[in-house]
Amino acid sequence: MVDSTYMSGRNRFGGRPQAMIWADNPAIFDNDQLVPPGTERYSDLAGISDTTNNEFLILSDHNRDAINFANQRIEQRKRMANGMMRSYYIGDKVSVTTAWTMLPSRSYFRRPDFDQSTGLSSYSKINNQEFTADGGAGGAEMLRWYYDHTGPFWVYFSYDRFTNFGEDDAAYQNLNEYAQIIQMYISAFEYSIVKRGRSNYDMWNINLTLEEV
Image 1 (cartoon, helix red, strand yellow):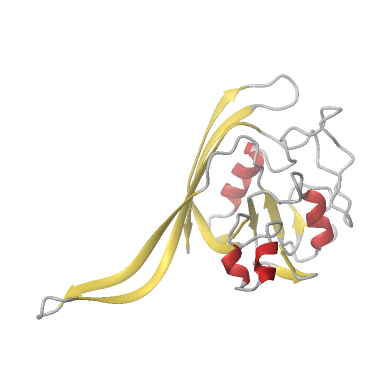
Image 2 (cartoon, rainbow, N blue to C red; image 1 turned 90 degrees about the horizontal axis):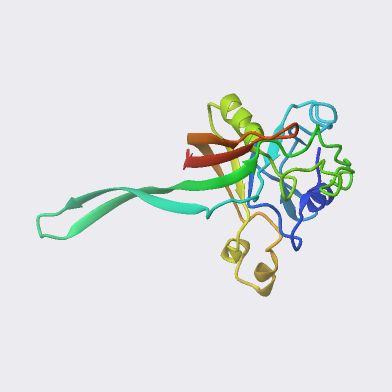
């Protein structure tokens, strides 16, 4: 099972994590931080240290476009006899769209050897063993998750939404954490093979749509 130290080792840029994680289960608290339970898919730890088979996938920010949130208010509106509108509010649901251009088809040249305690890998971009800019999932890894998860799963979002952490000064200190976790479906996954690489990887374009359960 991963912990907050492992997840910190997977952060690359200024201590802030990648914008999205896909996970089989909602987050648990470790050292006052929300982390996904289980092991990272495609790592050499997957299926070894966690007997529950709970997995998560850290998506890459490599050439990612904007993450677009669209809120849908579910309600029944009816105009009364006096002309006033009355609404029976049910809830709010969100859909998310984003895209990647020229995303490597794989994140590493083989299963990354993440240290279970630190989250660090001996593979690096220096010797051309890490292909995405931050070690996050490549196109083929995302596509496999899509095929394996015909039902809902949990999506973790990292962006500045400090209001989810309260109203005191401490709420402003959480940029390095996941601020929102939603159970969602993949409603559309479109990809194209832009360039076929030589012996390492291909370059993909991906368009993704997620819908809240």
